[in-house]
Image (cartoon, rainbow, N blue to C red; front, side, top):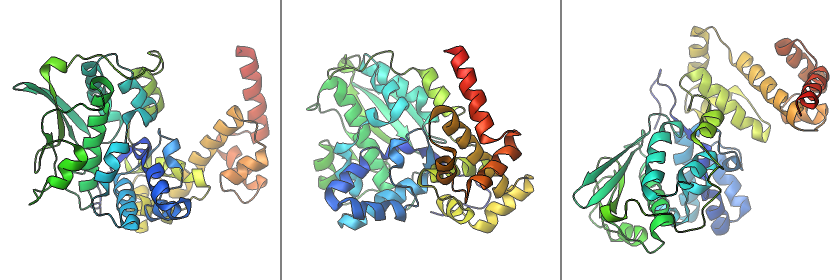
Amino acid sequence: MRLREGNIPGMVQAGTLAGMPEFFASELGRTKLKGVFEAAHLPMGIEVNPEHYIHWDQLMGFLDAGGRALGVESIGLELSPHLTVEAWGTWGRYVTSAPTLSQAMHRMQSAILLHGRNERMTIGREGEFVVCRVHNSVAGAKLYQNVSYCTAGLLQNCVALYLGKDWRGGAIDLDVPSLRATSRIEQHLKSTVRLGQSGTACRVPVELWNAPRRSPQPDKHRSLFCDILRNRHTGPPRTLPDAIEETIRVQLLDEVVSLDRVARSLNMSRRHVQRVLSNEGQSFRDIARRTKVTRGKELLRETDASITDISVALGYASVAHFGRAFAAVTDQTPSAYREVANRTLSLTS
């Protein structure tokens, strides 16, 4: 799916990948797993940085590339039993540390906008069931089917924390085209399914809606909604410059940043990215420099890595290049910034 010119890129939390690389590594090996990441224009290991955002096309591309490598068309069905919201960093811990199922689902509903752009969740009663329905913004996209299967698995696994692994609820709704045979889908999801629905939904019997958590519960103070806000700031990127900045942060994880790579990751042309930025009085070079320096400040404050190692990690050709870029943004040298940061820390500790 190629974005129309002018659209704001849809992005989703990188933690959504959690559990997928481990599955592919066990089936394919680490060498072929690297190829799956590369096919999706993602740095290997991005899932361990769940607070970053990636393009929806990268998530769908990752699933598609992994499925192709395994020779499995509907890879989302194979993955669904192995996925858990608990692995989604602060966001997941906030949801699954709720003492009851109803509270967990309402937490998911309130926080889902911080998980992905234009995502939403509804909760309502239908007869003897409470229906929890997730609407993904990329529903209907060419490679979306696997996302729907994974979403269904995540909903089921979240409910299972409160009702047990053998829990069986009402029908699962999937927002994928109707197929002649649904037996394979029902076999993997272990439930009857309804295709061609609005959103992906699971059903919980009304009498079990307030069930307490069964499996060992994390420290209830571990993650709060304010923690998600602190990590997400204002949620997924809302403008193209913001999306570019977030994509650069992701690419810094493998120390290679370029306009071409960013454009590919956002599924846009290099020329379109440059034109939009020019219209807003910005340039890729300035955004990249600002983003790198911000990351450099974090590394200077919070690690004891040498300035040489930091300059390499940020993709600079030399310490001198890093120093000039840093001073242009902060009016300080990296060593002076670290000295002030350390002195401030010692005074407040």
